[in-house]
Image (tube, rainbow, N blue to C red; front, side, top):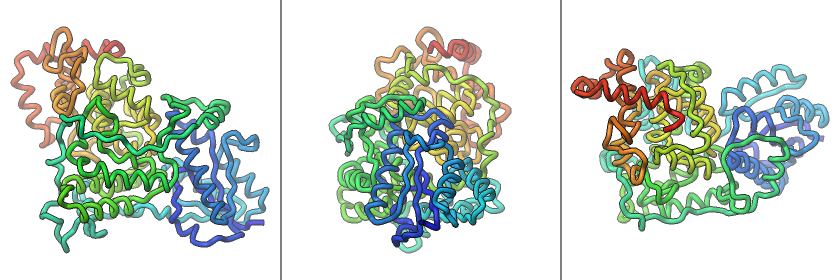
Length: 509
């Protein structure tokens, strides 16, 4: 009989963890598919499928290496669908003497596991996941005594600590950040390449999920599920990104186009967030690729990608653990408007939103500018309740786990934190969306019009946002230009009235 139970959560599929260095007959590894985790928010069907497949593959890999594994499927009649109930039953049945778990990345689960551990009749202890570049409290300690956090300072320290794109103590080519070079719209569709996918039939699993009564959003082609759900597949996607997409990644990372959903993005976020691959191995692979092919790949492509991982991703996790649980309640603007129903159907006349939402419903995926400057931009301009926004983003995207979702949405996208994550709200009129791609083509609304029939809602809502939040934003040094421009607009009242009309008719936009 095993003496030790080690719990592995669905986003802890790290085969490089020291737990697995040796095979120990006294250790039982446990993975569970539970309604507790499928039901706390309504998830995209592809997200549920991806996690279940990845977990099952990981359990199989451990078993093949000789480890003792207990896997509880969603359809198992003995599955009590709750972490605590299942753990207590296993501990009783297997006569376990010691319970161990890896620190969860969600505050919700962290609190639950601490409470469970205190109530157990046996000893319990936690260990690190050995995935991130920093420990939970690193960011809070890093900015100790500072009034504000600044991602750039953190990012530079990560570069130095891990010797990434460095020339001694200085950044390669004399610059830390090449973001200015990475904002182009895609004009030539011939540059696009097909993504590396791993199509599989998921009919059997889909039936299991449906028979279990799990409510989901979005859709899936049962015979053509495309996401990588094992470490081996994820490494193939990483290789493909380095070989075929990296050379154009940075230049077009902010592009908006109907031609292709993925552009030159890596599609590695689910693999990293479930820990099938580590951020450092991804970064090192990309860095080495650049060193070997500097004539074909500019440093701007590489630096932009690396910054998203060791800068932004790591930084957001640090913010999460420094500011939770209060962060999850923040609502700086006091926004309370209901999320329009068409965010769940994609049925809106605004082409940029229709395309981005329908893509999300079809693929469980949208890249960062679609999330920030299309859907998130509209939500902020319209004054949508951040609680409903969090629910939407957390449910719809395959890579959304709260530590990375809530900091990006309630923080960067919605400025609901009042400036912890970003120094200003990320809002724009139709001009930005038009400049970044072809979304405005053949739209029911005219991006050049602020008022009147067919005027793009982004234009009037943009000025309405600044007008109604003047007291909170006017003294922000990064927003002065907006208020100076607003003061000069001759038909300001007409524009504000147009926005009021759109807000009243928001379900019909």
